[in-house]
Length: 260
Image 1 (cartoon, rainbow, N blue to C red):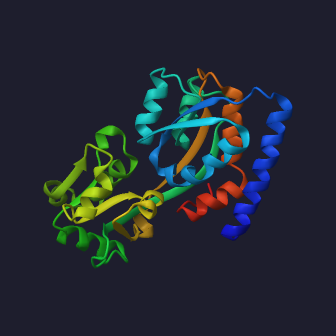
Image 2 (image 1 turned 45 degrees about the vertical axis):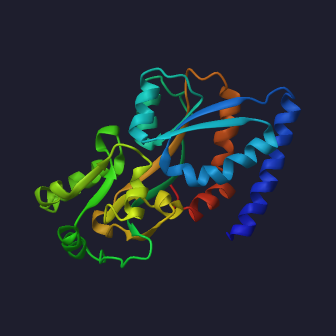
């Protein structure tokens, strides 16, 4: 599906959704609070304003790591929608924190490697090339694994399997502030960064080198679910219904996501 066709289809879908909402209840416009992993932010930045314009709903996103968002729901924070990893949403569903039957898989994105914009791209064409690039790197950086960042948690395990964990430890920077995950590489303070491909493609000042080699690639499946203690469950269903349409999935594909 082309981008233009996807946009046209979304516009028609939104018109239909807006009409159904209006017919059901003219006073149904609501404020929807979403706790979400940051990997979907580039796609949501494009999709959600269309929902807001057509339906009258206001959607307030709080972005962070998928682990951090899931933990906030588990701790009882009031929200309407959770977007986290599929297994996390499923677990919270089994615990009664997410409404049963509302888990909706949106798309998956892999781990990518990025460098400062305009600088030479290192060789990551194979597992061995990736390993040698890591050993030669002056510094690498990723989100703090202690905050529940899936990329860094996985990469620590991958480095151990590749038998380079000890060599990489002294030159690894774990960013405490999310704003630094791309900014530090864009400034040249950190040579190589790791993040989800969907976020790298939208980040200024950096270039995507490419995905991890296929044998060691790891994907995060993003899923949405309605939070049990949410105040706007009907509006939450409108949001999830829209961001899971085929047209919305086409937008997510353009932002670096694969089909779930």
